[in-house]
Length: 492
Ligand SMILES: [Zn+2]
Ligand SMILES: [Zn+2]
Image 1 (cartoon, rainbow, N blue to C red):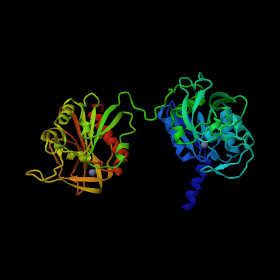
Image 2 (image 1 turned 135 degrees about the vertical axis):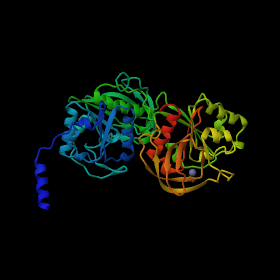
Image 3 (image 1 turned 60 degrees about the vertical axis):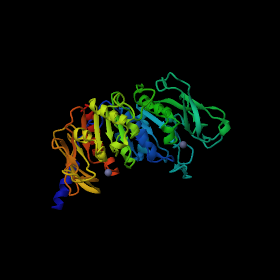
Image 4 (image 1 turned 90 degrees about the vertical axis):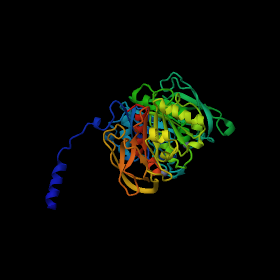
C-alpha cells in the first residue's frame, strides 16, 4: 500500500502543475504592495503592521509582507507593483537581490523607509534592537544606486544627531507626492551626511541644527530617483511608531508608495487612520454605575459606519440628545432616583423621537422602578428584589456556554452559533411579545440572550452578552453590537 501511494505521488509531481492566475488572490483594481522586512535594527515588528495598515485603510492597496526576503525570487515578486523596504540587515543573496533589482529596473516601484537606506553598503551589518554585528559584507552597489544614497563611516559620518522635533520643508512642492501637503513637523531622527548618488530629485529637507549636534546644513530627507524604467521614493523619516504616526510621515509615505507604483498620486494630503463614512451613525455610549474592562471601548472603535462618543451618566442625559445622536447604547447601571427630572425627560424625548436604543448587558438593570421604561421601552428587566409574579434575577460570572442566533432578523443574519465565556443572567423578566434574537442553554442562564422590544416609537434592542474582555474582543460580539446599532438607526 505504501509503495502504491509513493508511486502515485511521484507520478503527480512529474506532471506539469497548472498555474492559477493571481487575480484569484488579490483584490481587483488595487495596487499590489510587498513589504520587505524581518531584519532591522529598528522595531520592525511594531512598525511593519503600521506601514501595512495605513495603506490598507486608504482602500487603494492590497498589501503583503515578507519577513524572509532572502527567499524572494522573480516569480514571487511578479504579481506586485511596488516593494517597500523596512529592512536593515544582512544581504539577501544572489537570487533575491537579482529579483529585486530587475523588478525595479523593469519598471516597477520601490519605497525605502528610514534605515532601509543603510544596508548593503560599506558599513557594518546592524542587528536587532540597535545592535551591531561587527560584520562587514561585500557591498551591493545596485542597492545604493536604487535608493539614491549610501551611508559612510568616514568623515563626515552618515548618521544623525539627537532625535528631536523639526520642520520638514518642501523643496519641490509641485511634485505629485508633495502637492497639497503642507510643510510639517515631526519628532524623528534627522539623517545627515548621506553620500548622495547622481539623479536624485530632492522633494523635502530639514535644517540639521548644530545646537543639538547637527551639521548646520539643510539635509535632504525625501527624494525620488529613477532606476531603469522604475521609480524609487526614499524617505529618511520613520524611526519608530511615534515618528510614523505623525500626519506628515503618513501622508508622504502613502502618497510615495502610490507614486512609485503608478507614477501618479490620487491620495489626499491627509490620510485618515480611523476613517469614518460621512453618514456614520452617531452613537452615544453611556457608562457609569458599574465597573468594566477597558476592552469595551475597542469593540466600538474601528467601524467606518459608526462614530461613538462616551459619556457617563448622569451627565450623558443633561441635554437634549436628539440633534447630536442617532443611537444611545446603555452600558451603565442607574436607578431613576439618581436622575434629575430634566434628564429623564431628555431620555424619554430621545426614545420617543424614533431614534435607536441598545441596552447592553448589565444596563438591563436600569430604571427598575420606572415602569414605562422597562415594560414599554426595553420589554424586560433584571429583577433586583423578588415581587409577586417577578422572581429575583440572578447572575453567574465566568460561564462557558453556546449562543445561538435566531434566523429571520437582519441583526443576526449569517452570524454563526458561538462559544462564549461571559456572565449569564437567570430569571430576567421579559415581555412575551419580544422578538428573540439569541438563545443560550445553560443551567445558570435564561434561554433568551437578546431581543428586539415590541416598542413602536423607536427601535430597541437588548443584548445580554458583554461582561468582559473575552466577549468585547470577539469579532462576533462586535458584529452583533454593530449590527444592532445599525439596525436601530434604520440602516440595516
Ligand atoms: Zn532610526
Ligand atoms: Zn456583567
